[in-house]
Amino acid sequence: MDKRKEAPYDEKEDNMLMKRVKMVTEDVVKAKDMQSSLIESIPRTSGLKAPIMQLTGHQGEIFSCRFDSSGRYIASGSFDQLILIWNTYGDCSNFGQLKGHKRAILDLQWSRDSRVIYSASADQTAGTWDLETGQRLRKHTGHEDIINCIATARRGTEFFATGSDDTTISLWDGRQKNAIDYFDAEYAADWIAILKYGICEKDLLFIK
Image 1 (cartoon, rainbow, N blue to C red):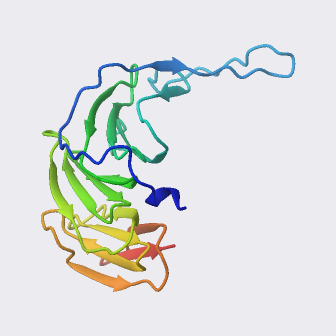
Image 2 (image 1 turned 30 degrees about the horizontal axis):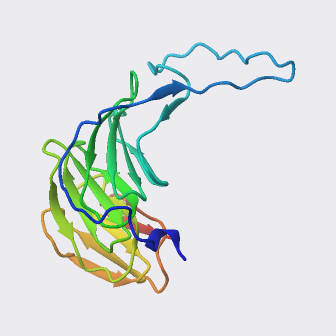
């Protein structure tokens, strides 16, 4: 059975941004060279607490992990139906979670101003989430199978596209529930990207 379509752990829907009670972070750099001595890392200027940080909190496989445009925050989506929000710096603390999807979350994207997250789920819906309130602003419906991927326009009018196993690509305005346009891709879409090209900066959609 396709893991993406398996039943969730909990069918309860509760849209809120919640603080995590406990967070464990570790420096997991334990690599050894052929002489069994610890490999020394080169001087770093990134501001990160350690070269590698382990972030724990999800109760299932993680299918998507995205930095926001500033690099200060990370969003992760999982089989456990949760979107977790993390700080990039310091202890990489998990300071919130978004609940609402009823199946695995397969892809995520940030808005340009980092105030909104767009999600794609195996429950056949996409979501638009307000990071300030933790509420789901819109539940976008229309696909007839799991939604594998999501992409946002980085310039011009801010919209997003979703690709599904139903072989369609849908275009959405986050302020509207229903798709503003869609077309048949002939095959299930596993990856999409929106780029600007040419002097007129027209949108070019790549599909895989």
